[in-house]
Each structure stands twice: as C-alpha cells, then as structure tokens.
Length: 370
Image (cartoon, rainbow, N blue to C red; front, side):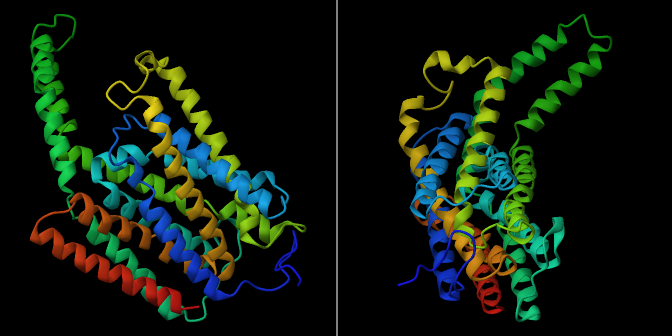
C-alpha cells in the first residue's frame, strides 16, 4: 500500500472528514489544556509558560520523527515564536477573566485575523475562496457575535479574587497615602497626594483589571491569528516545501521553545530572579509542583496545534479558523461553569446559553460552507 504522503508533496488529498475529526480533537485539547493548573497557584506564570513550551516542543518533535523528519524551513520557525509571544499573556488573562472568557476574547480576534488573512490573502499568502461564500460570511459573523456576548459574562472567581486583592492591599494603599502626605521632595505634594491614591485604587479595581485583561486578550489574539501565516507562505511560495500541514509541527515547536526561553531569560535579567531564592514563585506554588501540570498543559496544546494543521490541510484556513478559534473557548467556558462554577447567576446563564447557541450555529455554517 502506498503511503498517503511523500515528504514533499501529498499523493492524495486528505479527506474532509479528517478535517472535522481534527477540529473535534483540537476542541477537546484546547478546551481542557488549562484544567491541570486549576488547583495550583502558578504565580506570575513565567515558569509555567516555559515548561508548557518545552512540553509542546518535545511532543511535536516526537510527531516530527514519526512522520519521517521532513525539512524544517527557517521562516516557519516564526510561527512558533508568534505563538510563544501570545502565550506569555495567558496567565494574566486567565487570572483576571477566568479560564473560558479570556480564551473566547482572544479567539474572536484570532478568528477575524486568521479568517481575513486566509480569505483575502493578507501577508503575502493566496486568498482562499470557500465553496459557499455567503454561508461562510454568515458563519463567521455569528461566531464573532457569540464572543461579543461572552465578554459581558462576569466570572465569579474573578470578582472574588479582585475583591480579595482590594482587601489585602488596603493597608498598603493607606500607607502609601500616609507616606505621600509627608513627602517634601515633590514640587507639588498636594497634587501628588491626590493623584497617586486615586491611581492605585483604580488600578486595583475590578474594572481596571478586566480592561487590562481584555487588551492583553486582543494582543494575543492578533498573534494567534497570524501563527500559521509563515507556514502557509512557505507552502505556497517555496518550490520544494511540503503541502501537508503536519510536516511543520517541528517548526512550530522549535519556535515556541526559542521564544519562551528568550522571554524567560529577559524576565530573569529584569528581575534578577528574586523569587528563585524561595524555591518557587513569591506567592505561588513551588516550581517542582508546577512541573507536571505545566507539562500536561503543553502536551494538550501540542495535540491541538497538530490537529489544527491537519484541519487546515483537509479543509482550508478560511473555514477552520472561525471554528477552531471559538469552539475550544466555548467548551472551556462550559467546563468552567459546570466544574468550577466560574459563571453563576440567571442573567449570566442566559448570556452563556445565547452565546453558545451563536457559537454552535456559526461553526456549523462555516463548516458546511466548504
């Protein structure tokens, strides 16, 4: 029996059904990848994201060896670097918005950037025309609308966490006010006295923290939406480049490892690794206890990325992005609600039900638009 692929060019096209199976796989993988960390305080997240990236790179390299070690193109390593840059915002987002809501916001941005770049041919890649353009646009619109509804769902854990921060930091704020009032070095001490406490109170407020998390989600969504652009560009413009998506898993893993390690070293230099003297994060779980959950998260993420590459090949990016960018977040939000009660209250339940309906309808229409 002939193999389905050679190392350079596919002998036969991957069936569309494989693409839908891959989408199901990435939905489960991405939707559950943060569950192993729910019982741990991962602190500022730098050690977590580094171990996660190592696990992702290791898993994808094993896949790379299993499929015959295809050529690694330098430009495709940029895909992993883009992913690692977006990944460093994961912990701050989840801590402020919850496991599902943050994912859904960055997925909306990723959806729009990924769909538009592949549909209209941004960044030097060729435009992809779906079989039913109207159905594709309606599906994308519905999925984008679903995420706009998710934004207004306030997770219970976030409110409690921010409230706890306000209580713990009230004494610090009071001391700051007292120190400022006694300052003689500022040229305008009265103005300084009024502005600093106001800024501190606003910065520690729930509103400010949610705004910060939303901005970080948008930033990471832009990066996630362009992750596959270097790979697609190489596939379309490099003569000897492989046309099968799974051949680029090693590039993705290598870029992720390089990026995450670079950011960790920069962070260590900037802070002089002050927390390492305590054997872990200053207010988090010791490093050794984070190894296993961080590793499992990385393996799940690698599984999702591999499935996404297969789905892109079997279907096309303008179809897979709207589905793959919303279903995992919806599944994660549903799990967060059922298992950890991140979402509570009748109004929030209604919003969640409407948003999930939009997500499901949009995903179905987009999938059928091929």
